Image (cartoon, rainbow over all chains, first blue to last red; front, side):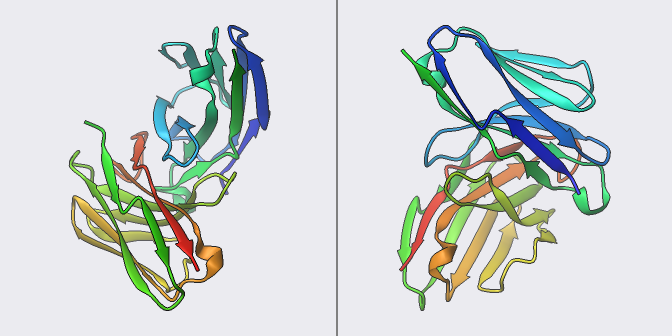
Length: 113
Length: 114
């Protein structure tokens, strides 16, 4: 069974204070690792897809990286509007994992002005 | 355009009511999903449709009945729900069911069962 563990559960930063969120995963044949941002009461907003170790993707202040066991979401000089829950999800190759997105518990990020 | 549209945004229903949630996408995606999300928890998969056929049912109680009338539409029919079924119901779609294709989510329907 696919498993995704995110840490920390919650992260409080000052505006401009860079940090990283971690996503550790166990999956049978990784087909994709996905990062989402979710604001309260809203649906998850897609950020990045990664699928091979060493891959990196960037968007504004966010950078996602992938190794064979974990992914990091680096946030550079965050702003208060970056406050949200960040979700990591994986999709496995087949068997009972096929077609399923398995989510981690999420990291609640709060950025103070 | 990466929009998945869900209606209604909010729904309050009694335990004896029958209601339906609707989801629509026009991205040409052939996989569509229903997820349930409780407060402070991640989305939990309920159903997956691939090419309009039910592909995955995560042992969801029969009081939830999915329907995929065509490749753009997905419905979730609700009947005799329990208060513990109150949650945010999310629809998503992706190009295909497998592989590295990302899923795009709608804004959800906030369901309250009274």
